[in-house]
Length: 435
Image: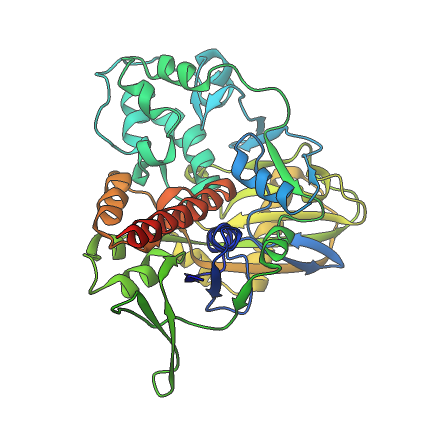
């Protein structure tokens, strides 16, 4: 039986491990922290089980929903999908856009005012989303629509994020249309029926817990070194004073860019990978003594407003949960690390003050929690996918990388990344067996 090591027990690592174990291999998962799930986890606050990181996944992309189905987990859809945008006041978030890029200028006029499109040359080389949108539709669309929507996913700014990596559905159409709006229409196509998002019943944080069942997962086990041997790989764990070693025929590295670069150093060039930047964020969860405030599922806040909060979710209404009102706010964007230097109590106070500014009277606070994700979300700068392709082309056989650093930050994307990394090393092992 082939021995395979997976480094990292986030959803990418767990998906890889399940794929490898399902193929009949002996798999060990080595996780540096004391929990599985990476940025997908949940815990109680105010007696309610509430997600501390991601709280939903795309239903129309198969990887997440297929994993949940294979684990026998029930999926639920949001009770409401109506969201708002908080600028000078709360306004309905325009529908029919591609991550804020309009397919109909009239539909966004209430948010951005009068807009006229400037045609440009077909796009064939990667650039930032901000540069593209500003050159074609102006600053108002970039700042008030695109930036908050992208920020809600990547915690980054449109001016620093790659079109090709963050808008893959739009990318092929940019080479075919001089009009950005026409390209967005082609990318959007005919919307599929049914809800866009889903959650495993009770909490998305239950998904990695279930995915880890039956796997050999070793928590609080940091991998400090990776060496080539005559038969495969040797992973060094334990302390520097008392190292331990794990031998494997193949390895999947499902960890963020910086630790991956450290482990890969000496095997492949890692300067570009080590240079991938990350944004730090905090999730502020509030439990309130009264009905859920506001309306709809929540609202986004453009960075140009100067507010600390970048997004608010009315969790108890969005997922139609009984019990006290639960509201969660996302704080922190790329380049705003100073915001997160505040104490937990101060962040809670700021979020509550901005909540009252947006909504008016808000029920009294009964409990709260601040979850900090330092270096939580990778920033896909222009050229990111080319960087990833160069890295993967340089990797030796039986060694693969997976996770949010490479192929997308959403739950289905990281599950797919882990699954495909597992399939890659399985193919490598078959080739080596054939000689």
